[in-house]
Length: 131
Image 1 (cartoon, helix red, strand yellow):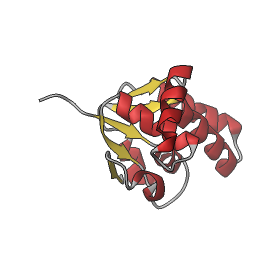
Image 2 (image 1 turned 180 degrees about the horizontal axis):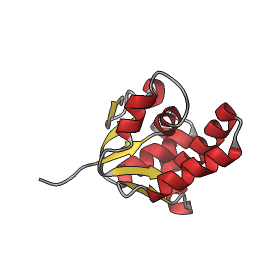
Image 3 (image 1 turned 90 degrees about the horizontal axis):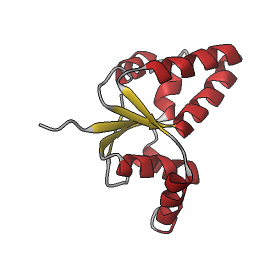
Image 4 (image 1 turned 30 degrees about the vertical axis):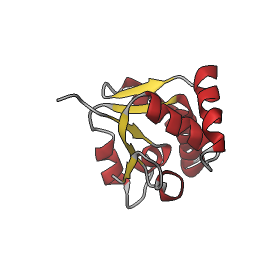
């Protein structure tokens, strides 16, 4: 049986590395096999974690931790990904960052999006699950 990739959204990363009631479930989600993210997820996570914790060094350590996870593959945000995302803008009512995430999902044959973002990822052709 072929493995299926799962895209991990930045809100899951943020909850995994900040104090909240979802922390444990999000930490477990980050331990799953065949996770996919993109550099934009890292950027969003870094900014939010630094803001919540008021600690830039902690946010840096989180990003280094993510980059060292063997089960997580990070894809670059390049011009091809950007243009593939904006091509979908006419068909989908998503902000550009969510279009980039969704396009990453499509280009990497992800079976699921792990996210709490029901509003943006709840009505797509890829299943959204919560940790």
